[in-house]
Length: 471
Image (cartoon, rainbow, N blue to C red; front, side):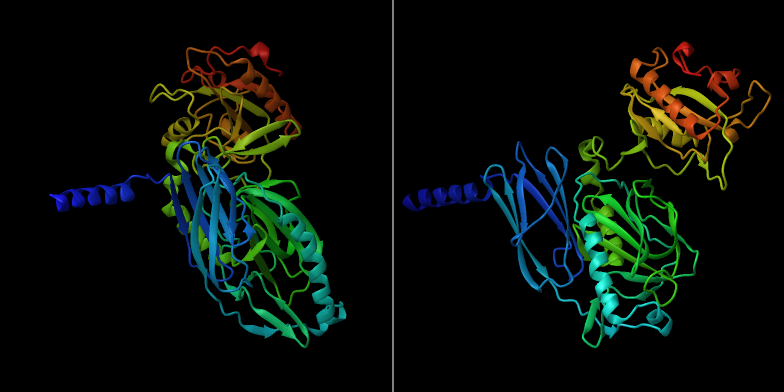
């Protein structure tokens, strides 16, 4: 009898120890055994009212991104000179709980090559001594920029390569030596011809666009979340500091400026100011993105963040949110002559969630149409198509002056409201602000409704007060 009672008590104790304390977090580490120069990505979901106080890798403080009330994202760049071995990631919570995990940094062999110059470069002053001196000054300027951390994320999909054809002619991490002078090549050199188009690897903001002695013409893009991309030795810079750019947008031409032996693009990535292998970053990040989409889409966790919609300035007090689409428009090469604005209205007809932007855009996708801009019930302005591109918004239509093919010379604006409603006060206000802004760039002669150019087919914008519009 005693043995049976002892056995039951032991079984109860074992069950309590194993299942009694429910785990109040879910931690996932992508690439937990990185090499020097790699990236580690961590997702963390917390229960109840828990939140993060601090994150450490060893003794080093790590930045983190709060996706929503209980979801967090970490990008950790592993310094190429970080000593191989085990490191503890420690996450401190507001209930004094610590979540700990060990990662193992593995050694990476970096080849030693020659720090080369040419007679032509040396005539310009590019001696080993001057090269090293210039690098210190130029890196100091860039470091001050890339050390800044923004929790907001500008991108909403995978990263792409900066050139259409990627040929690596200068490996990441190479140690280039000549005499007592030594520099480590913390990027990759990609082969190309002068004038080849260079593309932004994802959405972001141009935070530096200038000419350096060593790096030549240079662009730095902030993608948010501590991620920066760098493009060096350019022939021509096509964007200005402060401009926002889309994934795949042409930002520059490949060149041979600064300390450069031959035409190429030096391409770098920095994660929280750590200089990591850019080609490995793109591969690792894109694999992570494919495997962890649910982390970002469950419970609409990013709908209120900037991962799907990024605030882009039009003018000082006008903003729109960028939503990337790949249908419903045609790229226009050259400068389009725009003299007309067409006002539309639409809503989600599939269910009772009439104002859901994602569902409305999905309807556009099914029909292969899109406007340039969309204004929701809260007055938020979304840009779907660049103004210079031809959006398929007007369909078969004819202008009062007799012109057809209205898409070719017009900008389309959708207002989101139910057919039985009218635009609200905020929508009228934002529409007028947007129209004023468009007029600064184009000579607008006509502001019309969809039904004005296609009366046999369309009756929108519904219940619209044209007296409220500044024509």
